[in-house]
Length: 254
Image (cartoon, rainbow, N blue to C red):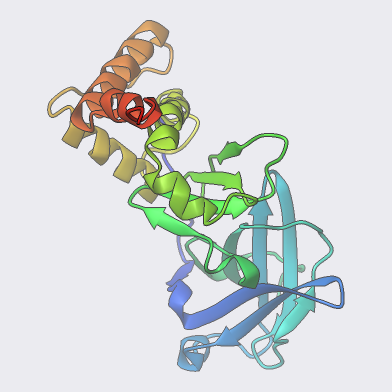
């Protein structure tokens, strides 16, 4: 599996030093940023440039928020349709070209629109979000910067919560989600020191203690055998087939 290489000299900032949100005003998409810990920025030159990097479904936008000394609180986005993009705060050296050498950055985190705040929920290593998925009832988004995200048709009442708890959805869909995520991980598509990858591998070890995943991306048969064992163990532990059968059986006739 691939390893991330961290550039030396770049300072690590906590994402909690700012509060960032997406909104839409007058039909225009906006991103706003509020400083929660202003002291965290005092260590940088006043003319250091501040930006946000948003990424979703291969769409990337760098939002320039000005400088440390003259920082904008909001900017109109050029891209339309961001739902839950990966977000990263960046501070760049003022002596380089725009968005050049980084002095500091945060880890990536998932940014939600204001109107999605109450619709997203998490269940450990998997996120759920009510969204416009039609004509499909659900979609899986696997991202480098954050935990895999299951988007569920927002026309369903309490869609995110329903997806987490409905035995039909859980029994029929979650095994497919687990399979897709581990196919990506074991192919070496994502660095194994990414926090979400580490957590998924720890989860797999809790399901199958001592059954280590194959480390060679070329071992296709070994990968598939491992994933099948993991799915069997996962489904057996939670009795998914029995719960699905029970939920789909008609009630006793009166």
